[in-house]
Image (cartoon, rainbow over all chains, first blue to last red):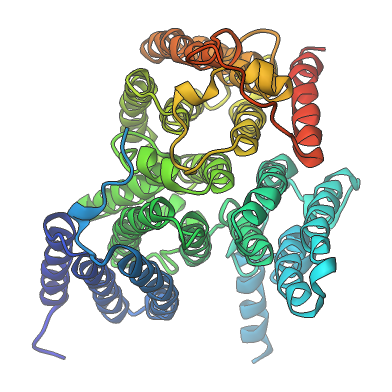
Length: 102
Length: 502
């Protein structure tokens, strides 16, 4: 613990966050996009734990539990929607989502 | 030793004078309890008594709304006092809760028949609807980022379910997935913003840097760094997403078009209201010290939002899509009021402050939206997401009451006197004049002028134009509950405007 600083943790969290964001914007497979969204949440969680540890306040660590719980609920609903869509369309490519237009 | 305990006691009292004041969130508890009761009824009631489910939900919502009438009640605290160890703040006027309750009540009326016609479960819909309503009501009184995040996400997850509710419809599922990805992205950005604010303020010695009051004090003392500013920007972006403000409005047309029509109305009203009150709460609460940086940004966003929605709506031929895009420019009006509140905190329009003006604007928007939505939901459509303008032709002959609903609803949305929508728009324009925000005022006037064009093209199809080849279509049957909603809302759209003037 002594040889890593707050900056190390933040840089890693930042990299993961940008990686997730890039994935959301670039990838076409909805499952991969959804995993990238979860990666962004995980990156925020990592930064939260690091701040909590180095600022010596517990609030961040407590918020992590809430974030994980909320993310679990979100994944349950999200995967259900994606699976239901796959059953009807047979694909989860975002290019195929073209029912809604003018 | 006793001195230490006395000090701890003082510290607790300073942090939260009323640590667990359950009475202050009685309306939220009642709505959450009601939502569980819906599930219980679905389990226990025989098929021929299932109609009781939506009936109890509506009665319950009306009773919770009636709680506003009780004088000096524990849930009507208007003093600025933190409860639950600073998690919640109790200076919320009851009218703010009324916006969400009213929207949920009307959604229940529209949804009941709509869902039964499509063979979807009514009880589960009401359950999720009430959970989301309770979450919104908690969200707008949060005083801590933990409450804020949990309430916001509870509402968001519920809304994903409501948007993708029709599992047998491609459009509903597609809208659900699109909303899921857009919403997930906004929550991830919002969370990162919260983390940056928490970390950067915690590093300079703020004890609880997730608490709005302490964030506000720290920012006022100039303790914010560049990292804090980045966090604030991300958080405001998340709130702007809920409101549907530029540049976070791109999800709106697709999601509103594909969602089941009752959900579209709920998204347009309750979700937009939540975004509006959240944004107001944040910019006038914890981030008020940054007002000189936020106000110009909000002004630009308000101008663009006012124009972009209406200009895009000109090009569309789908009624649901047009209403979605017009909702974007309604969000622009609300943003304009927030900007006015931020530029001149004491500005009032006819003795109404910015918050009351926004509440009134939202109530008028709810009336207009639900009149239009009820008319659409009562019309037959092979696919719920295809509501072309042409399908409205001959409506005046087929079902005069639906054409009337469109008339009152669209009149109110467009802001035609003497409807309530006109008064609402007028209040915001007066607010802008008093705050001397001429650019926004100009954009608002252009926006109204443009909107009248497409609003009335919808009305023209419904009222004036005969059917395509002159053939007579069979008259439409309109259910009793639809007649009731239309009658009540049409009366409200006229009387509401007159009441506020007198």
